[in-house]
Length: 439
Image (tube, rainbow, N blue to C red):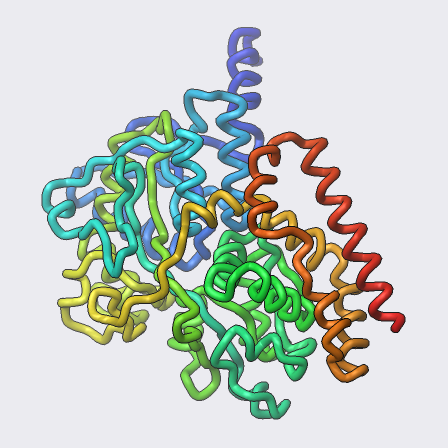
């Protein structure tokens, strides 16, 4: 029988951490939250346990929390700190792109982390102008990501489509119903790719491009990995994708079946950070984990194909490492991409992207995702009528300017205001799409 005091403590723990997160206790424990796919968990957790046992002479328990995509993980962590401002009960936030970590840093939810001297000497502060370490050392890039178009070569040939090379290619009417995309309200990767298009083409042209891509999309998903699965299965011809999802599948199934292209001049290098959350209950273990991830053995897990000596055991990860020494060892580097030798990518304003993230997510959700059937119907009618410019301009006109979107960020934490704006966007979009589909 539980005593009254024990019951009170149990209830307090539930209120602090929630039923969905059984937090590990004890010094030799580690709690990680990450949007990374399961293959990364399945490689890094066993490898770290083995490393920890050999180096420190004791076993380690690791709990991996998965709430969905990056946006979902951010909401989860914020809710934990809302219940207890001192600690979320979680040690490490890993993955999701730089924008997410700028948001965490701005909210003062990260602690600084000191690497061992040996690893610190190996990690540069930047590559091609992209920061690999935050100024306050609150986060470190654990890998680098690039973005592009993943496509099924068999479906492209069968349906007589042009192989995509640019973002504009998949906005063409020939790709109607041939795309799948992730909802940016759940996927940080989707948000980053949309931000890339808006920044490289400019707000107006970029929004028009995003609208046509959304209109061509067959389905919006919650996870950024689901569009990859749809392409592999042949359900659609193509999807916007982060490089490592695409390259891992190409490594498994072959370049004769699948392709991945980075639109020249319209993609970026994006650091995929790892950080210690404020009030981490297992601080020392967390620092040791980050040190392991950034070490040469930890980084080689990203680069080598499945089964290679020092490589992953279960699945190819296909990522770009941030430790230059990881590229110097033996073995076939699967990706063929070395950020320390390749041509620099476009400059990306991650601060602006971070500021706009939530507004952009809600804007796309309101006018592209939630009324997708209406958007699709309007697009089909415009195509049938010969893509006349007045109708096309009305369909793709942005609901707000970039300056107006940035101004909205200042009041986006006010629920009633935010909901009112979202409802107005959605109502106006639906009315426009219905009018255009009837013409």
